[in-house]
Amino acid sequence: MHTLSGERAVRFGSAVIAYEPAWRERRDVEITVHPDLRVTVLCPAGRSPVAVDAVVLRKAPWILRQQLRFQDLHPLPTEPRFVAGETFRYLGRQYRLKLDEGSEPRVVLSRPYLRVVVPDVRDHAEVGKMIDRWRRARAAAVFAEHVEAIVMRCPWLGPRPETLRVRTMACRWGSCSASGVITLNPALVSAHPSCIEYVVAHELCHRKVMKHDQRFYRLLGRVVPDWQTRRDRLNNLR
Image 1 (cartoon, one colour):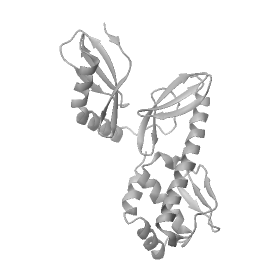
Image 2: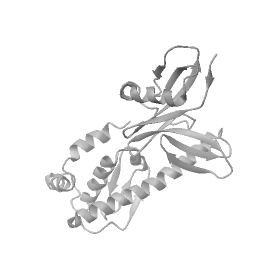
Image 3: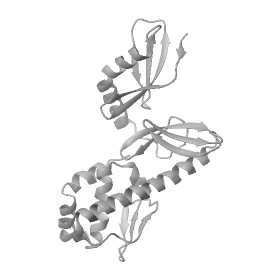
Image 4: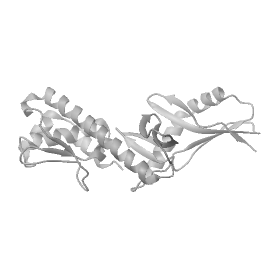
């Protein structure tokens, strides 16, 4: 028989490792990394939570390697279910969905959680709508920041575009119309900032050169010299 004390977390560099501890009659700490990336820790009865944190921290490199291995072996679900514990990406990092009931619906990002407060946590459709609205709002702000930064750094690209649209697209991260209107996929906000910068730069360059010819890629190379590396990283995003 063992008792649970709720989830705990330790920080290792820029990574936050959340784990579920359980105390039982045993001599040693046993750490398990599950295929869904959960980390559970069996602890000797009487061992303090702080002492367990220290053990998890010592094993952090191994834990992170196991999680990366499972990510490679088991792609994330293509269709989210919006249930507690599900993982979502934001700016290249993974967050676990935490659902709480409350009268003031809101979405709060706090590592390692994407916390959603709703009147009924069983209403997965409403949870999905809230996450979609939050992601679109965050995407619009993040994309605008990247546009501003690139235009300031590369004034020869021309003025900041008057219209920046955020719209879901089935097969494209972004597009640029003949009139210079840039449209970006809100799903792009899941990617690492360097990948977002690459896509934004790509579409800004299309305002100068519409075709994917040598002139275009020379221009893109001036803005993002390592654009091929960033493109490959983005293409590997699951």
